[in-house]
Length: 165
Image 1 (cartoon, rainbow, N blue to C red):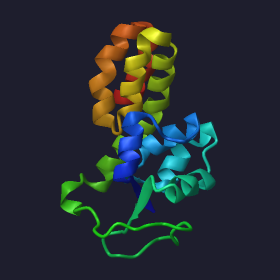
Image 2: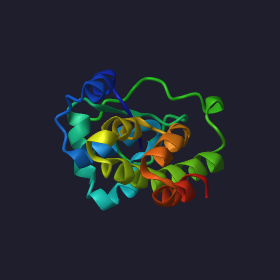
Image 3: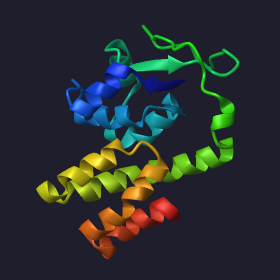
Image 4: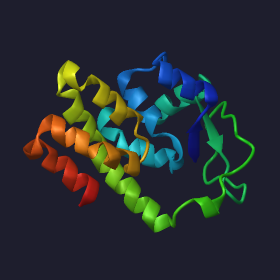
């Protein structure tokens, strides 16, 4: 199942008015309409995110389910799932293997980037917000030079390996 943020979820994220725990917020950011729920749960398992957290976001109207291209669902929708009408155009998406590779890099790099920028304290606050808002590998890579400048080349090496390795 693939979920995407609703319009109200997007605006609540931008205004930081979400009634979510910090770990739920981290997972919420990752729902971009491309990653499956299982991918997000796997990427955030270290934070303790469960399917119950996703149900919470769905019931609050922050996420909606995207049907697959053929209209079938691999699993039954979560309780109270709203479903958006149209599936994304498969021609607009990169090949599956490229997407999986990018997702794997992102899943590895995102927690490192958030840890590094959160460790900067107040001087890294805006950079940390930018990392949290980066919903894909490309956006995270765009932030890489700023992160390297802020944390230094030694600490940045781990993130560099995750982003490009």
